[in-house]
Length: 351
Image (cartoon, rainbow, N blue to C red; front, top):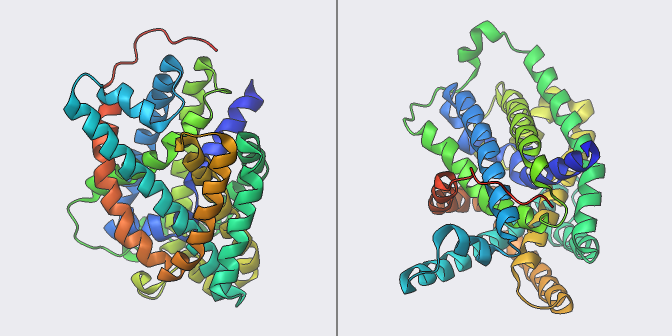
């Protein structure tokens, strides 16, 4: 049972720590740019993750949900034409966000290889697209196997970087190291971070419906909450002493490691690429889950998506995150509010 819990936990962590997270872009945008208040925001967001994952798993198991559209029908209802229209619109928006975020992962992979190994952007993006097709041809088993093997290693290296960064900082004078930007919406930012990530996580949670048991969801939710907060703090701490304008950096953590721990640059490069891979696979699984047709047709559509992602990846990794993630964060607020307000006191079926 513990092994099963760990497998699912690693899948969810792998879905969360993608290009935006491991590179530092997400942590900078949603937390670090708010100074020390961002640290509080990380803990708030992690708690919200735990609650949201628990409630979503409960809803999925109780109602035997097999698609995102079915999930929306459950939390919104289908007793009026207006609600049905809302579901249709929201389902399109959600699938669009998952698709765009998949493109961002492809862009991030290509960007890293182009900047650090000088492989052309299109070739780097093509490598990830091909890997996703190969792994997802094995359906959910492929995603679980990759996450189980890669995610624990990613977690260890991120924690090592965080510990090494903290050793360089005088904790009693932390305020002197962190950029103090006078924002007043740091709390909103932490909620947005949870809401947009849940849009990406829900298809993954749905795809795990056949292997998850009701008695496991509390333990999985707590584990994801704790691990997410630890990893986010580690990324945050690695950015504290960056000596240039972080807004100008595509991948802040790569810069921090290159300037302070150059001997770890190659290792963390593998961490970033592996993080992007695990998230891209999760997103791809989500896309396949939401395509309501037979498996062979699903794969043909997914292959087409992978081909399209290659030219789109040239737009730019950081720019895509900056423009799109906050927008979808606001859209996801409607969904996360509905999730949080649904009752979960009834006994769930044990499967």
